[in-house]
Amino acid sequence: MTSNAESGPASGHGHVGASGPTRSLWLHLLKLSSAASAAGLALCAVPAALLDGAGGALSSSAGGLLVMLFFGISLLVGHFVGRSNPSGAIGVFVATYFIKVVGFAAVLFVVGAPQWLHARWFVAGAVTAVVLWQAAEIFGFSKARLQIYNDPEPKETPDA
Image (cartoon, rainbow, N blue to C red; front, side, top):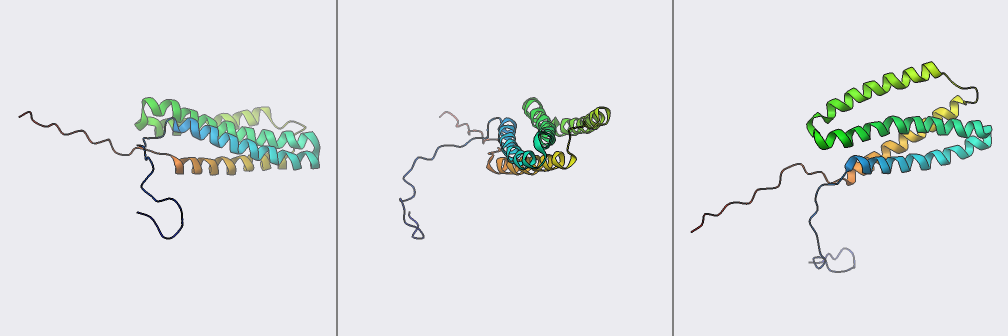
């Protein structure tokens, strides 16, 4: 059967293979999101360097890398816990989130802001990383093949 909406090859003549669930979803999302955020941080560092020198570029990179570390930990937890205990992964996500928020806040308050840090570039890098990370995750999830139902078991036929 062909469609007369567009010209092209006739449908139904190509090989269509079976498609199973996405392998290692969390690691795939980690790679995809990290690449998108890193590219955004590289672009954000250019105006930061032009306007405020190396301190601006380092500040934007530090803000973005902090966000990437924060989100990356969650995806790694999802990968390792989700394989062995898929139903308990949400609970572990919540516990990890709480530990990350308290831990990152404690580190930021104890260490404080270094002299070279430009606050607006730090925030710009962090916002850039968050937006691109989330967009890449949404894109990655939209392309994921998640098996919702178990495959049907073959019916046994009685021997005659």
